[in-house]
Length: 220
Image (cartoon, rainbow, N blue to C red):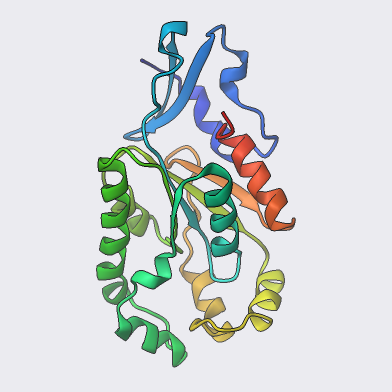
């Protein structure tokens, strides 16, 4: 296994191209281990061997479509899906419903539950998709505490677009009034430092899912 420093830029490549396509390998894979992209060539004899499990974390501020897109990916890929918000303790839900932003102290137990879900699936050798705002680098460090097997998919959009979506959303405990606090809290993941694919949400959910599958080469 040989590290390819130049491959880090692939995380934010919106073209959908895959760096291993230029490889002379008959079979290749790209994956992230402890801060570095790795490119591994495998012989034809290994073609049927199962790839390492991976969990996609659909992240971003409330209203970007994490659940909708996550469910589409889950169906298309046949991967298990978990709504990260369902792992919040009741006290967090009540606090947000009342219009109060969560503090780091509120979030730590929730983030540990999300990380436990991720670890559980990876330990079982299963792929999965989970939603989690994961707004800060420190939060993402908890989710990716293993150092491998996690790919963040950062769904992004401008404030006006997301605010409009939230105003039209029903049956969710996150009120539109908290959106500004989420944008203020957001520390956008750095593509050279974290395993992340950044995707603009100015497209239909199906088109976004198509792009994610192509960009991460998940259609094989």
